[in-house]
Length: 69
Image (cartoon, rainbow, N blue to C red; front, side, top):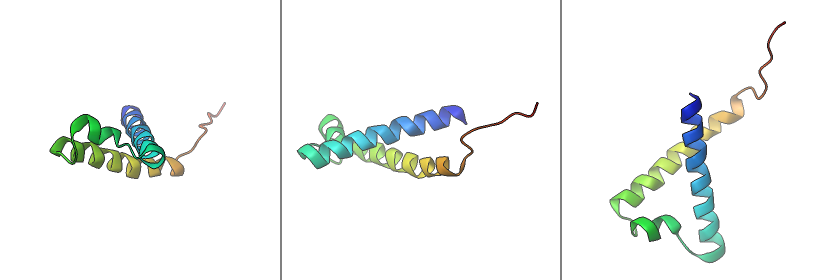
């Protein structure tokens, strides 16, 4: 699950950067790279959305794992 967590966090960060650019500068980085609402752009948006939903599960996990001595 560790690799899935890392992939999810990378996609969430990409989405956050893209939304920051949209909010501050009205510049959609994903659309400018892959085209405005092309199939690949929609796939990227869908993957970022799924990663965001998966990242919600991080709140329910234990932050520290203690080992018994």
